[in-house]
Length: 280
Ligand SMILES: Nc1ncnc2c1ncn2[C@@H]1O[C@H](COP(=O)(O)OP(=O)(O)OP(=O)(O)O)[C@@H](O)[C@H]1O
Image (cartoon, rainbow, N blue to C red; front, top):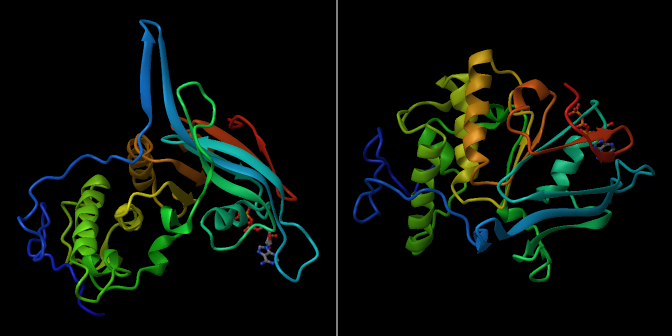
């Protein structure tokens, strides 16, 4: 494993990095740019601008096959909210997540971020959701850990060449924020990721996706394989994260997510998505 560009000198919070001057002792709370902005018209009326993920008429037919896995999928998810997709195994949920993450391209339809003004109408042209701005945590992410230390795992994809100090400094700042944010700051960065508890492995997988704040954070079955305590921990963490991020979850664990879900959809066999309250 090559040495990471950012070398931790202190393994407990706060993390410090050789190339950061001065060493960080605190970091700002997460903020997204652009943020939603509210105007106050009178004592009872507040109008806010906001952005929304908009999926329009998305269909997907794998190349070389004759059948559609997704059939004209439509939904919107406003920023800083949590949406949950549930449905039968094999209905197409993961297929949809893969399109949102840019792993595959829709056969037809569009996936955009649309900004809205105070009056609720679009304030500019929709922007495509770019894969670099999407964080995705697959099912059982710990199975894909490749490094011997937490620090190497989290910095694995970082640029290694010299001469890009600004980028590396930004990544280091983002890393410190992400580590604190998911509650990993008490964990030694020298620890082997595979020796972490189930819940902490999931936190690490989340931290990796949060170094650069994504426009959309996607989680595929985030509670799968965890014991009851770790499941409760992850749910609590997501409750916190959704205040700042747009989160889309695919899960069968409807009861545990019920208190966090802002919108939900059922994926029906044949790849048809329809809005539906959680069937609890
Ligand atoms: N590239 C592909 N070519 C052909 N069929 C595919 C391809 N990818 C997925 N499928 C099929 O599409 C269907 C939907 O799969 P998908 O993984 O999206 O379902 P899912 O709803 O996420 O299921 P689960 O809840 O079990 O994870 C399945 O029948 C799967 O076998």
